[in-house]
Image (cartoon, rainbow, N blue to C red):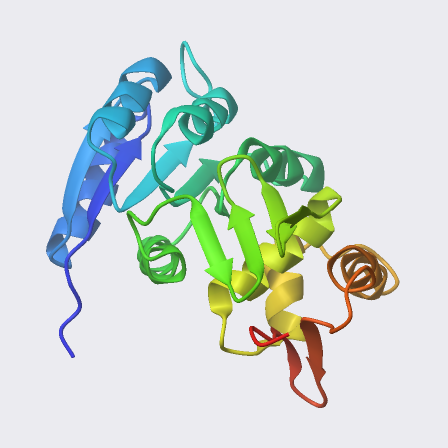
Length: 229
């Protein structure tokens, strides 16, 4: 099946990196638009939302964190954001996710990996769809990072919310444990078994107040949401 070409906005202050990313994207049939600073890039993204936004963290004027946060607040649809940075500490990644980034790529990176991540983001988020995501009785507002089940608000901490969002975006597919760990922490997984405790917190918020659980364990595979709960 032929894949539809993407329109990708690249906000990056390095002329050389913009040129190389543009050449890569266009060589694979995608359209690339560019901005060299945060304010100009934000206005472009709001005026004509791209399929995917490739966003540098260290931008002049308005840095990538503030661009991403403003986009989430002001855009009328969900724009998938791949954040680029030379910083590789876990705290920097978490700050990016808190601002609303969907994925993270540390410089230097292989062009093919950037392309693969853009394609994955466009599929995962079904580019251009509204902020509201529904799975059965569950509704997630990706703009406000809030969730409701049967109209009742769910009290979710950041990591359980991100697990729920990942499961909802993958639905009806089952996500493996390794897929969830990669989505949450990349290659910098905290010690012990952090996923177990966050899944427990998610079950407490999503399922405990209701008669039927939505979060299902598929033994030997991973986890999924049951839309018929």
